Every structure is written in C-alpha cells, then in structure tokens.
Length: 372
Length: 264
Ligand SMILES: Nc1ncnc2c1ncn2[C@@H]1O[C@H](COP(=O)(O)OP(=O)(O)OP(=O)(O)O)[C@@H](O)[C@H]1O
Ligand SMILES: [Mg+2]
Image (cartoon, rainbow over all chains, first blue to last red; front, top):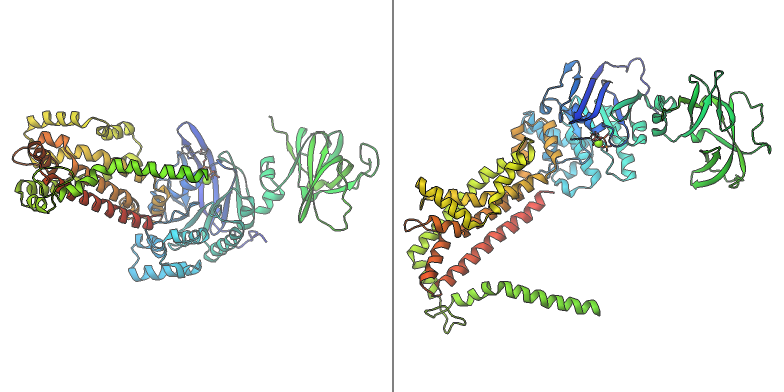
C-alpha cells in the first residue's frame, strides 16, 4: 500500500523551505512556512481552497517572489533565481500548452531552450511522448486533444527536461472520475520510475493519500501537519486535519483528571487523555458499530467491555449508498454518523428507535476544545 | 404559427434595414458604368469610360499611390509602436498605467475636426504641412489608439500560464515574448493591421488640413474633385475603393479564421 520510508530510502533533504512567507499588499497569505522534502519523494500539499497551496508552489517555481524566507534545492539557495534558471517542471491545472505549436513542438520546447542538438531534441521529445502513450498524436495541435491527452502532453513537456523537481498544481481536477483514477496511477508510476522529487498540489484527500509518500496538510497559509498518509489519517494532529482527511464525527465533552470524558451525560474513555476541561472528541464513522439498545435504561450498562466505549442515542435516519449504510444517530444535541458495510441478512433498526454505539477506546481522538 | 409570422416580419424588417444602409453603396455600382457626362440615376447609357478616365487621371493616380504608401508606412509604424506599448500596459504594473492607457486611446473620443485643427496649428509652426512625415505623424495619432486597443484586448485575454510555462521550461523573457506571446497574439495583430490600414487609407478630415498641391491623398483628391465637378468618375473610384476594402476584410477573415485554427 503506502511506501513507508525504510532505512535505505530516507534520503537527503532536497527541497527545503525556510520560514517562507508571502504577502499580497496588506494580506498575509503565507505567514511562515518551513518544510523539507527528501530526494525522490512525492509530497502532497493538501488543503481547502484559498489556503495558499498554489502560492507556495509558484514561489518554488520562481513565478512569484517570496516576501520573506529562503528556498534551497540540494543545499543551493534559489530564492532569488529567475524561474528560467531553476530547472523545475511545472504542470498547470489549465495545462497551459502552447496553442500555436504541435504536441511534439510543445514537448520539444524545454529541450530547445537548453540548446540540445536538433536531432536529439526530436528523439527525446518523441520518447517522452511514448512514455505517456501519445506518440501517435505528435503532429496534432493541443486544441485537437481531449482533456486527458492534453494533461499527458503537459506531463511529458515537464518531464522531458529531466527537472530536479516536478511541480504539479491540481493536475487531475479537470478530468472525469475514471480518467482521474488512471492518471493517478500513471503519474505515480512515472514519478517512481524516474525517481524525481515531486510536489503535488491538491484539495482532494484521496489523491493525496493514495499517491504521495508524505502529505502537508495546509490551512490558512500554515502547515497543520506533515506526515505519511497513515500518520495523517490515524494520528491527525488537530481536529482540522481529522475532519479534512477522511470522514469524522465531532462531539463536545468534558474531560476530568482521570481521563474520563463526559459526553451528553454519558461517560467514555480515550486511549490517551492529555487534555482536561472542555474537549472535542472524534471517531471515524466506519470504526463504530451500531446495535439495538440493550436495555430500556437511558444509559448503557455500567460495566462495559474493557477498552470499549459505548454511547446511547436515537437513530434519526439511515442512508443507503450501495456498499455502505450510513446511520445518523442523535446523541444529546449532537449527531453521530456510523458507517457499516451493507449485509443482506441485516434486520436494520428503524428510525426513531434507541440504539447503542460502540467503538474501541483506542479509536477515540481527543483534542482540547477550540476557544470559539 | 405565431413564431412563423413574427420571424417573417423580422426578416422583412432586417431586409429593409440592410437595403437602407447599403443603398448608397449599391447605387454606386450602376452609376460607375454610366456613359453620361453628369452623375444621375438611372444612367441613360452604359460604358466603362469613367474607369478609363480615372486610370488616366494623373493627379488621382498619384494620390492613390500616396495613400497606399502612407497607409502601409502608418500601419507598420502603428504595430511597431503599439505592440510593445500594449505589452507594457497589460503585463507590467506601474503607477499611472491606467492614466497612460487612457491618454493613449483618448483621440478615439475627440472629434476629428478638433484634432485636425490642433495638428494644423502645431505642424504649421514646425514646417510639417504638406509633407510625408507630417501626414505619417498625423495619421499615427488616429491609428495608434485603434491598434493599442485591439492589441491590449488580445494580450489581456491570453492565458498567462502559457508564458509562465515557457519560463519554467527555461525561456528567457525575450524568448518568451517572441516564441509564445507574439504568436499567440497573431489574430489581434492581423485585426490591428487591417484596422490601421483602412483608417489611414480612409482618413479625410485631418488630412484635409495637411495636404496641398504638392502632396495629396486619394480621399482628399476625390473630395476636391466632387467639389468642382459632378461626373461619374467618383463613382468608378468608389467602386474600386469598395472592392479594395472588401479584399482587406476577406484577407482578415481568412487569416482570422486560420488564426482561430492555430490558436485555441
Ligand atoms: N495575486 C494575488 N493577489 C492577491 N491575493 C492573492 C493573489 N494570489 C492569491 N491570492 C490570495 O492568496 C490566497 C491563497 O491563494 P492560492 O491560490 O495559493 O490558494 P490555493 O490553496 O491554491 O487554492 P485553490 O485550491 O482554490 O487553488 C487566496 O486567499 C487568494 O485570494
Ligand atoms: Mg490553487
């Protein structure tokens, strides 16, 4: 599944951002961002719209100059190097192919700029087109290609110059779902085959989780968490990360000194209880189970299974979405969602009946409640 | 039924409108083949004598070549000045940019007669009246705003990311301009060329102030001709001018059509 960094592959830091900042006029879009990308790894910039992903990427590419901070590649300071001397391949969301050139000339452009001899330019451009399986369209104009084909031309154009870093700005967002899946696999395969260091901007968590070695989760211009897909998913550093990556339930409660959390008048435990006072607890919907309420009492049995949490609520409605059934349960004044795989023999509880929710205490995340 | 009716009414209305607008242009064609001594409609006899008379009229022919040369020079200069100017105004941010752009294109809004008088006063003191340089400069005042507008629109609608892509691929700024920006603004350049050429070739009001016995343009010469006489020679000249204009427009249509194939 995911590529865990093993002893051999923990390579040297390649692209390093040091307290990088950008202001547009009075607006501080990126206050201060520090980050080290290792050689040969693919890192995702993941975050909601407007959080500064593109701005950061454009600073790395040299298309806009940072207000503060430093960018180094392989130890060399490139902060003030003009973009045509940076040796980076950039794939734009709009692809930005040259409309007046054929596909082949588009791909050849970067090689021509590097004064590669003419016959070699043609050979290498054709080879790059072969890699993306487009050599039969070499003489077409970009406007005569489909979105997916244009996307692959853009990729070939960026890769043919063998840049030190490949930058991709939401390269898949203009493709339909099926093509997106194919391109995900293809881009990742190309990146791993060439061993190129890559930065992949996206606001799609599935892309980030499935394609990248590590993920930078960004929010409002700063880094919320930097880690492997598993770390980000299993050990989110903040409620924001938890709710942005994957689906999650958020409940408010109060934690006491023994680590017992009171939620809607009922008591649960978490694996770790760092916080005291008002807390926010989070659970993944598919890690929870649903059962008809065992007794008529308002509160579940006082002697729960060790390490297991349980909450009583009322089933409000359920949504059938093919592979999954989503149950929406009211617990106090909060709503909790539980996801279960569809089973045929399932006697589903009816809406309006009391139910018990159960899940492992170790699957419970606790964060100090936000001030707001 | 109802839509059918309105659409017929609409068609007739449009037909009448076009007839009204084009009547003078259409009337010129039969009149140019008149065999009469004076302009009248319908002509009482037919001939091509006025076409011969036009081609043998040395003053008229000299004015035609002057106009052609003038329009060519003015068009070339307009492009050479307006392309970098439009680039500066659309790609760079500097204080006073909008003011400068408005200043450049202001002559579009001024009555030409005012412009002509102003130019007359300035040129008189500089000895530029009835000179080729004077005419070139005066026509530039009229054509530059058109060229600048058309080219600025062309540059403004370009995908900036194409230029950025070229930069990241290793193209220096000048290379980006010649290999990406300029080819991508080709339709705008063709349109600006046609516009400048026609505007210069057609310009009367300002030119009237600046021409004399030594140098004159075709429109001015025709104006003077009609002032003194009323024979169908001007009709023949008009037909030729209409055909020239049509030719230019068709060239533009062809290249713009091709341009659309090349770009986007
Ligand atoms: N040239 C600019 N001038 C002023 N503000 C800008 C400029 N470019 C970006 N911004 C602002 O900076 C913030 C971050 O923009 P950016 O394009 O980096 O977001 P993003 O994370 O790429 O979002 P998206 O997912 O929508 O592409 C936004 O609030 C945006 O309005
Ligand atoms: Mg963006």
